[in-house]
Image (cartoon, rainbow, N blue to C red; front, side, top):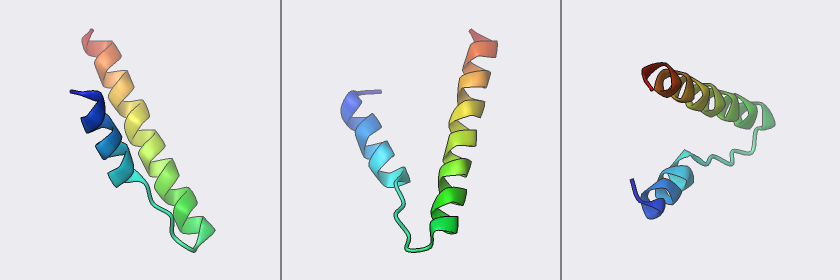
Length: 45
């Protein structure tokens, strides 16, 4: 995956709602998804 694709993915995951609680939940969900992806890749590798 090229760096350009990663930046585009990061931009699409970005969320700036007015509600701080919603922003926190969104960031928490993205963080858990990334952590799960890293765990799966480390188990496979």
